[in-house]
Length: 186
Length: 186
DNA sequence: GTCTATACCTTGATAGAC
DNA sequence: GTCTATCAAGGTATAGAC
Image (cartoon, rainbow over all chains, first blue to last red; front, side, top):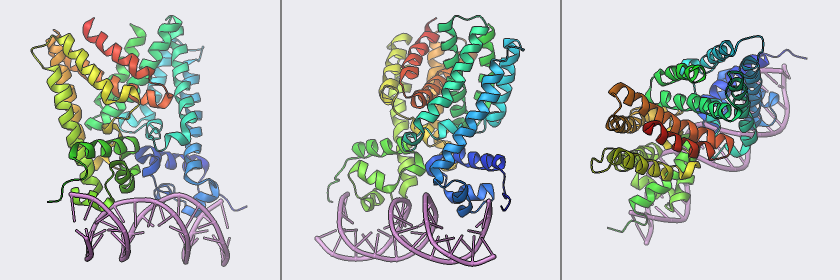
Protein backbone atom coordinates (compact mmCIF):
# COMPACT_ATOMS: atom_id res chain seq x y z
CA UNK A 1 0.00 0.00 0.00
CA UNK A 2 1.00 3.59 -0.56
CA UNK A 3 2.25 5.15 2.67
CA UNK A 4 0.16 7.70 4.53
CA UNK A 5 1.23 11.25 3.80
CA UNK A 6 0.16 12.34 7.28
CA UNK A 7 0.04 10.00 10.27
CA UNK A 8 -2.97 9.69 12.54
CA UNK A 9 -1.39 11.77 15.28
CA UNK A 10 -0.66 14.74 13.02
CA UNK A 11 -4.05 14.34 11.41
CA UNK A 12 -5.90 14.47 14.71
CA UNK A 13 -3.95 17.50 15.85
CA UNK A 14 -4.85 19.47 12.75
CA UNK A 15 -8.47 18.38 12.67
CA UNK A 16 -8.99 19.15 16.34
CA UNK A 17 -7.41 22.59 16.02
CA UNK A 18 -9.92 23.59 13.36
CA UNK A 19 -12.95 22.04 15.04
CA UNK A 20 -12.37 23.67 18.38
CA UNK A 21 -11.61 27.05 16.86
CA UNK A 22 -14.56 27.16 14.48
CA UNK A 23 -17.05 24.60 15.76
CA UNK A 24 -18.78 21.95 13.67
CA UNK A 25 -20.72 24.29 11.39
CA UNK A 26 -17.89 26.78 11.04
CA UNK A 27 -15.27 24.20 10.12
CA UNK A 28 -15.44 23.45 6.41
CA UNK A 29 -13.82 20.47 4.72
CA UNK A 30 -11.59 23.00 3.00
CA UNK A 31 -10.48 24.34 6.38
CA UNK A 32 -9.78 20.80 7.58
CA UNK A 33 -7.89 20.04 4.38
CA UNK A 34 -5.66 23.08 4.67
CA UNK A 35 -4.94 22.48 8.34
CA UNK A 36 -3.89 18.88 7.81
CA UNK A 37 -2.18 19.08 4.43
CA UNK A 38 -4.47 16.41 3.03
CA UNK A 39 -6.78 17.20 0.11
CA UNK A 40 -10.50 16.90 0.67
CA UNK A 41 -10.82 13.64 -1.25
CA UNK A 42 -8.07 12.15 0.89
CA UNK A 43 -9.93 13.15 4.04
CA UNK A 44 -12.97 11.33 2.73
CA UNK A 45 -10.77 8.29 2.11
CA UNK A 46 -9.66 8.32 5.75
CA UNK A 47 -13.10 9.25 7.06
CA UNK A 48 -15.78 7.91 4.68
CA UNK A 49 -18.47 9.37 6.93
CA UNK A 50 -17.25 12.89 6.20
CA UNK A 51 -17.21 15.71 8.69
CA UNK A 52 -19.38 13.90 11.21
CA UNK A 53 -16.99 10.97 11.35
CA UNK A 54 -14.06 13.36 11.65
CA UNK A 55 -15.65 15.03 14.66
CA UNK A 56 -16.36 11.65 16.22
CA UNK A 57 -12.75 10.63 15.71
CA UNK A 58 -11.55 13.84 17.33
CA UNK A 59 -13.86 13.24 20.28
CA UNK A 60 -12.49 9.70 20.61
CA UNK A 61 -8.98 11.12 20.51
CA UNK A 62 -9.74 13.63 23.24
CA UNK A 63 -11.25 10.80 25.26
CA UNK A 64 -7.97 8.89 25.07
CA UNK A 65 -6.08 12.04 26.02
CA UNK A 66 -8.32 12.59 29.03
CA UNK A 67 -7.94 9.04 30.30
CA UNK A 68 -4.16 9.36 30.17
CA UNK A 69 -3.65 12.95 31.25
CA UNK A 70 -6.56 13.45 33.63
CA UNK A 71 -8.05 10.18 34.85
CA UNK A 72 -4.84 8.18 35.21
CA UNK A 73 -2.95 11.15 36.64
CA UNK A 74 -5.63 11.95 39.22
CA UNK A 75 -5.97 8.35 40.39
CA UNK A 76 -2.29 7.39 40.42
CA UNK A 77 -1.91 5.91 43.89
CA UNK A 78 1.90 6.19 43.72
CA UNK A 79 1.62 9.97 44.07
CA UNK A 80 0.15 12.13 46.79
CA UNK A 81 -3.23 13.73 46.00
CA UNK A 82 -1.57 17.15 45.82
CA UNK A 83 1.06 15.93 43.38
CA UNK A 84 -1.63 14.40 41.19
CA UNK A 85 -3.69 17.58 41.26
CA UNK A 86 -0.74 19.73 40.32
CA UNK A 87 0.19 17.43 37.44
CA UNK A 88 -3.39 17.38 36.16
CA UNK A 89 -3.56 21.16 36.33
CA UNK A 90 -0.33 21.39 34.35
CA UNK A 91 -1.84 19.10 31.72
CA UNK A 92 -5.03 21.19 31.61
CA UNK A 93 -2.95 24.31 31.15
CA UNK A 94 -1.19 22.70 28.19
CA UNK A 95 -4.42 21.32 26.71
CA UNK A 96 -5.96 24.78 26.55
CA UNK A 97 -2.79 26.57 25.51
CA UNK A 98 -2.60 28.58 28.74
CA UNK A 99 -6.20 29.68 28.29
CA UNK A 100 -6.09 30.80 24.67
CA UNK A 101 -7.81 27.75 23.19
CA UNK A 102 -11.47 26.82 23.05
CA UNK A 103 -12.56 23.50 24.52
CA UNK A 104 -13.59 21.05 21.80
CA UNK A 105 -16.50 19.89 23.96
CA UNK A 106 -17.77 23.43 24.26
CA UNK A 107 -17.29 24.00 20.53
CA UNK A 108 -19.39 20.98 19.64
CA UNK A 109 -22.07 21.75 22.22
CA UNK A 110 -24.23 23.92 20.00
CA UNK A 111 -27.85 23.04 19.40
CA UNK A 112 -27.04 22.36 15.75
CA UNK A 113 -24.22 19.86 16.39
CA UNK A 114 -25.03 18.54 19.86
CA UNK A 115 -27.65 16.04 18.59
CA UNK A 116 -24.91 14.39 16.51
CA UNK A 117 -22.50 13.86 19.42
CA UNK A 118 -24.52 14.25 22.59
CA UNK A 119 -23.60 10.94 24.18
CA UNK A 120 -19.91 11.24 23.33
CA UNK A 121 -19.68 14.72 24.79
CA UNK A 122 -21.46 13.75 27.98
CA UNK A 123 -19.11 10.78 28.41
CA UNK A 124 -16.05 12.96 27.96
CA UNK A 125 -17.22 15.37 30.64
CA UNK A 126 -18.09 12.49 32.94
CA UNK A 127 -14.54 11.10 32.80
CA UNK A 128 -13.24 14.38 34.20
CA UNK A 129 -15.96 14.61 36.82
CA UNK A 130 -15.42 11.06 38.06
CA UNK A 131 -11.65 11.50 38.18
CA UNK A 132 -11.82 14.74 40.13
CA UNK A 133 -14.41 13.22 42.46
CA UNK A 134 -12.01 10.36 43.21
CA UNK A 135 -9.28 12.91 43.87
CA UNK A 136 -11.54 14.74 46.28
CA UNK A 137 -12.21 11.55 48.22
CA UNK A 138 -8.47 10.88 48.32
CA UNK A 139 -8.05 14.37 49.74
CA UNK A 140 -10.38 13.26 52.52
CA UNK A 141 -13.64 14.87 51.45
CA UNK A 142 -16.90 13.00 51.93
CA UNK A 143 -18.38 11.47 48.81
CA UNK A 144 -21.07 14.09 48.42
CA UNK A 145 -18.65 16.96 48.93
CA UNK A 146 -16.10 15.41 46.56
CA UNK A 147 -18.68 15.19 43.78
CA UNK A 148 -19.66 18.80 44.36
CA UNK A 149 -16.04 19.94 44.18
CA UNK A 150 -15.49 17.92 40.99
CA UNK A 151 -18.38 19.65 39.27
CA UNK A 152 -17.19 23.02 40.53
CA UNK A 153 -13.75 22.27 39.12
CA UNK A 154 -15.11 21.64 35.63
CA UNK A 155 -17.38 24.66 35.86
CA UNK A 156 -14.39 26.81 36.74
CA UNK A 157 -12.34 25.43 33.85
CA UNK A 158 -15.10 25.90 31.29
CA UNK A 159 -16.33 29.21 32.65
CA UNK A 160 -12.89 30.75 32.89
CA UNK A 161 -12.14 29.66 29.32
CA UNK A 162 -15.29 31.39 28.08
CA UNK A 163 -14.45 34.54 30.01
CA UNK A 164 -10.82 34.51 28.90
CA UNK A 165 -11.91 34.34 25.26
CA UNK A 166 -14.60 36.97 25.70
CA UNK A 167 -12.42 39.41 27.62
CA UNK A 168 -9.37 38.83 25.46
CA UNK A 169 -7.09 37.94 28.36
CA UNK A 170 -6.04 34.60 29.80
CA UNK A 171 -6.07 35.98 33.33
CA UNK A 172 -9.39 34.40 34.34
CA UNK A 173 -8.15 30.98 33.25
CA UNK A 174 -4.78 31.30 34.94
CA UNK A 175 -6.31 32.62 38.16
CA UNK A 176 -8.83 29.83 38.25
CA UNK A 177 -6.25 27.10 37.94
CA UNK A 178 -4.72 28.53 41.08
CA UNK A 179 -8.14 28.72 42.72
CA UNK A 180 -8.85 25.09 41.83
CA UNK A 181 -5.72 23.98 43.66
CA UNK A 182 -6.83 26.09 46.61
CA UNK A 183 -10.30 24.59 46.92
CA UNK A 184 -8.81 21.11 47.32
CA UNK A 185 -6.08 22.12 49.76
CA UNK A 186 -7.85 24.40 52.21
CA UNK B 1 -44.83 53.79 4.43
CA UNK B 2 -45.95 50.20 4.47
CA UNK B 3 -46.16 48.94 8.07
CA UNK B 4 -43.59 46.50 9.41
CA UNK B 5 -44.80 42.93 9.36
CA UNK B 6 -42.73 42.11 12.43
CA UNK B 7 -41.77 44.70 15.03
CA UNK B 8 -38.22 45.16 16.27
CA UNK B 9 -38.89 43.36 19.52
CA UNK B 10 -40.24 40.20 17.85
CA UNK B 11 -37.49 40.40 15.27
CA UNK B 12 -34.73 40.52 17.86
CA UNK B 13 -36.22 37.65 19.81
CA UNK B 14 -36.27 35.39 16.76
CA UNK B 15 -32.84 36.41 15.51
CA UNK B 16 -31.24 35.96 18.91
CA UNK B 17 -32.82 32.54 19.38
CA UNK B 18 -31.20 31.27 16.19
CA UNK B 19 -27.83 32.92 16.75
CA UNK B 20 -27.37 31.62 20.26
CA UNK B 21 -28.50 28.12 19.35
CA UNK B 22 -26.39 27.75 16.20
CA UNK B 23 -23.68 30.36 16.46
CA UNK B 24 -22.67 32.78 13.72
CA UNK B 25 -21.45 30.23 11.19
CA UNK B 26 -24.23 27.76 11.90
CA UNK B 27 -27.04 30.29 11.57
CA UNK B 28 -28.01 30.71 7.92
CA UNK B 29 -30.10 33.54 6.53
CA UNK B 30 -32.72 30.89 5.79
CA UNK B 31 -32.75 29.89 9.47
CA UNK B 32 -33.11 33.53 10.48
CA UNK B 33 -35.85 34.04 7.93
CA UNK B 34 -37.88 31.08 9.15
CA UNK B 35 -37.45 32.01 12.80
CA UNK B 36 -38.67 35.57 12.29
CA UNK B 37 -41.30 35.09 9.61
CA UNK B 38 -39.57 37.61 7.37
CA UNK B 39 -38.25 36.53 3.96
CA UNK B 40 -34.54 36.79 3.34
CA UNK B 41 -34.82 39.87 1.16
CA UNK B 42 -36.82 41.61 3.88
CA UNK B 43 -34.09 40.85 6.40
CA UNK B 44 -31.58 42.48 4.08
CA UNK B 45 -33.89 45.49 3.88
CA UNK B 46 -33.88 45.79 7.67
CA UNK B 47 -30.19 44.93 7.98
CA UNK B 48 -28.35 46.00 4.80
CA UNK B 49 -25.12 44.68 6.26
CA UNK B 50 -26.46 41.15 6.26
CA UNK B 51 -25.71 38.56 8.89
CA UNK B 52 -22.91 40.57 10.48
CA UNK B 53 -25.19 43.54 11.04
CA UNK B 54 -27.86 41.22 12.42
CA UNK B 55 -25.44 39.81 14.96
CA UNK B 56 -24.34 43.32 15.92
CA UNK B 57 -27.97 44.34 16.42
CA UNK B 58 -28.58 41.31 18.60
CA UNK B 59 -25.51 42.15 20.66
CA UNK B 60 -26.77 45.72 21.06
CA UNK B 61 -30.14 44.35 22.13
CA UNK B 62 -28.56 42.08 24.73
CA UNK B 63 -26.57 45.06 25.93
CA UNK B 64 -29.78 46.99 26.54
CA UNK B 65 -31.26 43.97 28.29
CA UNK B 66 -28.24 43.67 30.56
CA UNK B 67 -28.28 47.31 31.54
CA UNK B 68 -31.93 47.05 32.57
CA UNK B 69 -32.06 43.58 34.05
CA UNK B 70 -28.57 43.25 35.52
CA UNK B 71 -26.83 46.60 35.95
CA UNK B 72 -29.83 48.68 37.05
CA UNK B 73 -31.17 45.88 39.23
CA UNK B 74 -27.84 45.28 40.98
CA UNK B 75 -27.22 48.96 41.65
CA UNK B 76 -30.76 49.96 42.66
CA UNK B 77 -30.12 51.76 45.94
CA UNK B 78 -33.80 51.52 46.94
CA UNK B 79 -33.38 47.78 47.50
CA UNK B 80 -31.14 45.85 49.89
CA UNK B 81 -28.14 44.15 48.30
CA UNK B 82 -29.72 40.76 48.93
CA UNK B 83 -32.99 41.79 47.27
CA UNK B 84 -31.05 43.08 44.26
CA UNK B 85 -29.03 39.89 44.00
CA UNK B 86 -32.11 37.70 44.16
CA UNK B 87 -33.86 39.76 41.50
CA UNK B 88 -30.81 39.62 39.22
CA UNK B 89 -30.55 35.87 39.68
CA UNK B 90 -34.21 35.50 38.75
CA UNK B 91 -33.55 37.53 35.61
CA UNK B 92 -30.52 35.39 34.77
CA UNK B 93 -32.60 32.28 35.22
CA UNK B 94 -35.17 33.62 32.78
CA UNK B 95 -32.54 34.82 30.31
CA UNK B 96 -31.07 31.34 30.01
CA UNK B 97 -34.39 29.50 30.12
CA UNK B 98 -33.58 27.80 33.43
CA UNK B 99 -30.25 26.61 32.04
CA UNK B 100 -31.41 25.17 28.75
CA UNK B 101 -30.24 28.04 26.55
CA UNK B 102 -26.80 28.91 25.26
CA UNK B 103 -25.36 32.34 26.02
CA UNK B 104 -25.22 34.53 22.91
CA UNK B 105 -21.81 35.81 23.99
CA UNK B 106 -20.46 32.29 24.24
CA UNK B 107 -22.02 31.39 20.88
CA UNK B 108 -20.32 34.31 19.14
CA UNK B 109 -16.99 33.77 20.88
CA UNK B 110 -15.56 31.34 18.33
CA UNK B 111 -12.28 32.11 16.61
CA UNK B 112 -14.16 32.43 13.31
CA UNK B 113 -16.68 35.04 14.52
CA UNK B 114 -14.90 36.66 17.46
CA UNK B 115 -12.81 38.98 15.25
CA UNK B 116 -16.05 40.49 13.92
CA UNK B 117 -17.51 41.33 17.34
CA UNK B 118 -14.64 41.20 19.82
CA UNK B 119 -15.08 44.66 21.30
CA UNK B 120 -18.87 44.33 21.60
CA UNK B 121 -18.61 41.00 23.38
CA UNK B 122 -15.98 42.25 25.80
CA UNK B 123 -18.13 45.27 26.63
CA UNK B 124 -21.18 43.08 27.28
CA UNK B 125 -19.22 40.93 29.72
CA UNK B 126 -17.77 43.99 31.40
CA UNK B 127 -21.22 45.41 32.18
CA UNK B 128 -22.01 42.29 34.18
CA UNK B 129 -18.64 42.27 35.91
CA UNK B 130 -18.83 45.93 36.93
CA UNK B 131 -22.40 45.54 38.18
CA UNK B 132 -21.62 42.50 40.29
CA UNK B 133 -18.48 44.18 41.61
CA UNK B 134 -20.60 47.12 42.76
CA UNK B 135 -22.99 44.70 44.42
CA UNK B 136 -20.08 43.06 46.22
CA UNK B 137 -18.94 46.40 47.58
CA UNK B 138 -22.49 47.14 48.71
CA UNK B 139 -22.44 43.80 50.51
CA UNK B 140 -19.41 45.12 52.37
CA UNK B 141 -16.57 43.38 50.56
CA UNK B 142 -13.35 45.23 49.88
CA UNK B 143 -12.87 46.46 46.33
CA UNK B 144 -10.36 43.78 45.42
CA UNK B 145 -12.49 41.00 46.89
CA UNK B 146 -15.63 42.37 45.23
CA UNK B 147 -13.99 42.29 41.81
CA UNK B 148 -12.85 38.73 42.38
CA UNK B 149 -16.33 37.65 43.38
CA UNK B 150 -17.82 39.36 40.33
CA UNK B 151 -15.53 37.44 38.01
CA UNK B 152 -16.26 34.22 39.85
CA UNK B 153 -19.97 34.89 39.45
CA UNK B 154 -19.70 35.16 35.68
CA UNK B 155 -17.43 32.14 35.51
CA UNK B 156 -20.00 30.12 37.42
CA UNK B 157 -22.82 31.26 35.14
CA UNK B 158 -20.92 30.53 31.95
CA UNK B 159 -19.31 27.34 33.19
CA UNK B 160 -22.49 25.87 34.57
CA UNK B 161 -24.27 26.65 31.30
CA UNK B 162 -21.60 24.76 29.36
CA UNK B 163 -21.80 21.80 31.72
CA UNK B 164 -25.59 21.79 31.73
CA UNK B 165 -25.62 21.62 27.94
CA UNK B 166 -22.90 19.00 27.80
CA UNK B 167 -24.37 16.78 30.49
CA UNK B 168 -27.92 17.19 29.27
CA UNK B 169 -29.26 18.38 32.61
CA UNK B 170 -29.90 21.85 33.98
CA UNK B 171 -28.83 20.80 37.45
CA UNK B 172 -25.36 22.42 37.31
CA UNK B 173 -26.93 25.74 36.30
CA UNK B 174 -29.64 25.62 38.94
CA UNK B 175 -27.21 24.59 41.67
CA UNK B 176 -24.80 27.33 40.76
CA UNK B 177 -27.40 30.06 40.97
CA UNK B 178 -27.95 28.95 44.55
CA UNK B 179 -24.20 28.85 45.12
CA UNK B 180 -23.82 32.37 43.72
CA UNK B 181 -26.28 33.71 46.28
CA UNK B 182 -24.35 31.86 48.96
CA UNK B 183 -20.95 33.35 48.09
CA UNK B 184 -22.32 36.85 48.61
CA UNK B 185 -24.20 36.10 51.81
CA UNK B 186 -21.76 34.00 53.84
C1' DG C 1 -41.68 47.13 3.63
C1' DT C 2 -42.20 42.66 1.80
C1' DC C 3 -42.06 39.60 -1.60
C1' DT C 4 -40.46 36.21 -5.81
C1' DA C 5 -36.87 35.24 -8.67
C1' DT C 6 -32.27 34.91 -9.53
C1' DA C 7 -27.09 35.54 -9.72
C1' DC C 8 -23.06 33.88 -7.90
C1' DC C 9 -20.21 31.44 -4.72
C1' DT C 10 -18.97 27.93 -1.25
C1' DT C 11 -20.19 23.78 0.69
C1' DG C 12 -20.14 18.59 1.37
C1' DA C 13 -19.40 14.80 -1.22
C1' DT C 14 -18.03 11.62 -5.26
C1' DA C 15 -15.58 9.69 -9.62
C1' DG C 16 -11.76 8.19 -11.54
C1' DA C 17 -6.62 8.84 -12.78
C1' DC C 18 -2.19 7.82 -10.80
C1' DG D 1 -3.46 6.55 -0.41
C1' DT D 2 -3.58 10.85 -2.68
C1' DC D 3 -4.83 13.66 -6.08
C1' DT D 4 -7.64 16.78 -9.85
C1' DA D 5 -11.96 17.56 -11.58
C1' DT D 6 -16.67 17.80 -10.94
C1' DC D 7 -21.54 17.85 -9.25
C1' DA D 8 -25.74 19.00 -6.68
C1' DA D 9 -27.21 21.46 -2.78
C1' DG D 10 -27.33 25.23 0.00
C1' DG D 11 -25.01 29.68 1.17
C1' DT D 12 -25.01 35.05 0.85
C1' DA D 13 -26.63 38.72 -1.43
C1' DT D 14 -29.21 41.54 -5.00
C1' DA D 15 -32.91 43.14 -8.55
C1' DG D 16 -37.18 44.53 -9.31
C1' DA D 17 -42.44 43.90 -8.88
C1' DC D 18 -46.07 45.10 -5.75
